Image 1 (cartoon, rainbow, N blue to C red):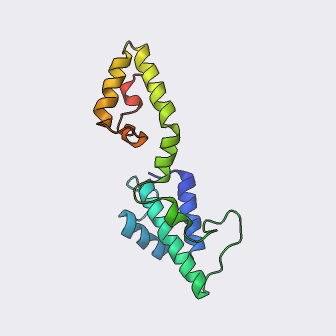
Image 2 (image 1 turned 135 degrees about the vertical axis):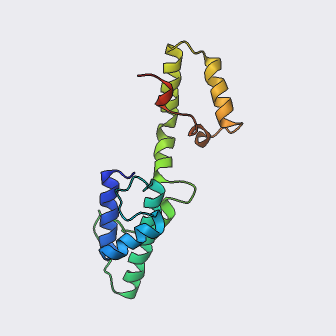
Image 3 (image 1 turned 60 degrees about the horizontal axis):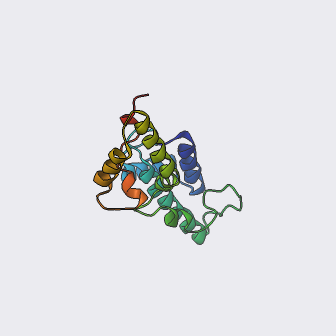
Length: 151
């Protein structure tokens, strides 16, 4: 489910692309299989795809002379190709955010496990089983979060 700022960003992108509400809802249906950005089924990946799609519509209209590109510093489509290149199929903005905070989150969880009496070997075994030989941060996304630790 999208956050409120993400929903606002999507609606701003709709306006900048010059899309009618009907076209906007059709795009949501086509890409996210829902008709509203408030749907629980709407994911960050859907947002990334829609922003790339709206960006293509915007710049196509700008090239045809039917839309005027915004010179505003807060415009969604300030630079051509930004959204299409920003979030590739294999990496979303949520992935990058998680990567930035993942090391600290894992250290915090391991600290909580240690406070519960689990030793370093226990955490190492979890890492080994989850990462299956991979040493990158993306493998650690599979480790369940705070559900392991009782509040």
